[in-house]
Every structure is written in structure tokens, then in C-alpha cells.
Image 1 (cartoon, rainbow, N blue to C red):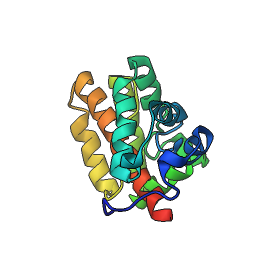
Image 2: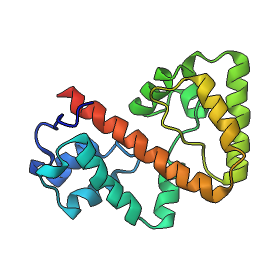
Image 3: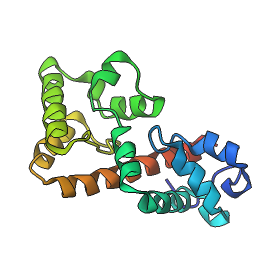
Length: 177
């Protein structure tokens, strides 16, 4: 995605309601981030995916730990119950299917289930990975590797991955116009 790609209409011209309607889903089930970003004020500088991503990340960085834990826990398990039941957000469905998670063999699906359970038991929140451009084999390998980390490393990694996911979603929104 080119850094010259801009949102149309420009983000700084949107009302709070329109901004949140358009960007409230960029962070999974966390429209408060878009609300706070709009309240912080927007300019033409935020009218690219990179610019808006930076502004949204300021909100995330300033959030309290309980808000960040809620943000982390808002994310579904990869190949988890929400995927099986068809209750993922449209964005998560697209991201997981784009990585081929919906094409898992029975053995791969069982591995995802075991990894999801082990990860949540160890860290107290779901495994989060920006899966765009990845595949189920790389994701399973990342699961195995990241299960070796400590909780502080994985908490920081979760926030980083969430910011990557948000950036991918901003790129997709900008490409729609």
C-alpha cells in the first residue's frame, strides 16, 4: 500500500460519529480507541493509513492496563470457537481465511485447539498474530515458539500484533475508495 494512499473523505473532516462508524472496528471490538483518537484531534497528517495508524497507536500507548487487557481479550482464538460458530467479525473471518486457517486438516485444527488452550493457560489471554501474508503452517510454528516466552514478552507482543492488525485494516479501508 502506497504511503500516498489517502482516505476519502479526509479523516479530519469526519464527525465523531462518522469517524467511529468508519474506523471503530479497526481495533477488534474496541471502538473506544477510535473515539479517543477523534477526541485527540485529527489533521490532514492523519489522512493516510500510516498517519492514522500512528494517531491510533498513541491512544493505545496511553491506555490503562485494564483497557489493554480488554483489547487483547477482545481478539478471537485462531481457528477457535468463534470461527467454528461463524461469529467472527468480518475482518477476522477474512484475515483467518486469507491465511488458510479455514482449510486446516483435522490434525492441524486439533493442534490449533491445543495451542490455544496452552497459550491461554500460560498467559491468561489469547494468542494474537497479524496473520495477513502468513499461512497456517507458519502460524502453528509461531505458536510453538511463542509458548516458550514469558508473560511480559507476550503481553508486549500482543499489543504489537494488534497494532499490525489495525494497520492492515486501515490499508484495506483506504483501498476501498
